[in-house]
Image (cartoon, rainbow, N blue to C red; front, side):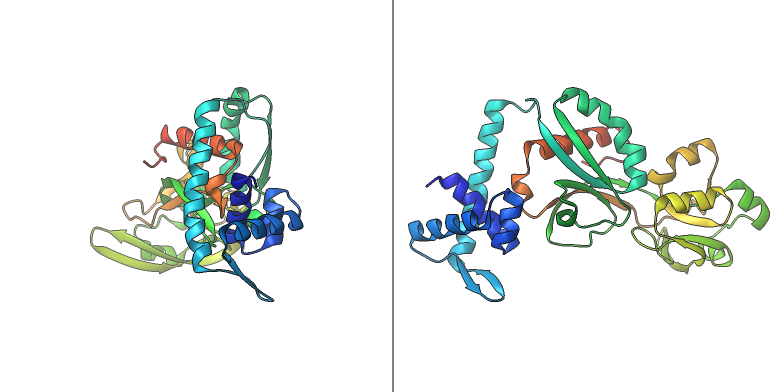
Length: 301
């Protein structure tokens, strides 16, 4: 019995609570994964899962074995990496998921550096502002902003930026410049219908806190639409500084009520549950993005 192989099968079954899902993740057949777990249970002399029509439930022995298994597999992965070297060439294909605007502005322009280091690696970049699930996308790693919708993920915060209220100079010239958060309620707002958007915004200043309800003139489902509407002078909007950095620097949009702050927006590097055993391609990509962000004001330690 190949213990490392069997452990990997057991860990994925434990984390997905499904033989078929584990088999899909491991690119194996379901019977082979079921057989591996059965062999493991026979060797250990105990049941690791209770099987029923509702699915799989880990036993106490299964939970204990899982905790030891992930440590063992981590050590095995580190041993392989130590021998091969962190800078070993990468091969194959890496599927990365992220939001359209952020990836286009901040990640894709930096990818030539990464791909030059790994000429035999190809990347499938899955761009969607809807935060489709990693399993549905078949992605190995994703960049997500804001609150994570699912706890069934392994995530690490790698960046953070301010949220700002923005408007075009033409809009402010026509409708006036808001001086305090409550003034925003009399202005037309462009609001994201999903993701980091929302109509209720909390502002803070010193020990004061105030909640404002924006008045949407338009709701959009993608950041590109929000940015286009603001540039067209249709209203003001709340957006992450990441998304409008270039426009702020060029003066195409202007920040208002800047003496008040909103909750910062976090950037997460997310992997499907079981990221402890992420591929070398995914680990290298994560390290690259973290290094790139660390050189900016958006990185976190």
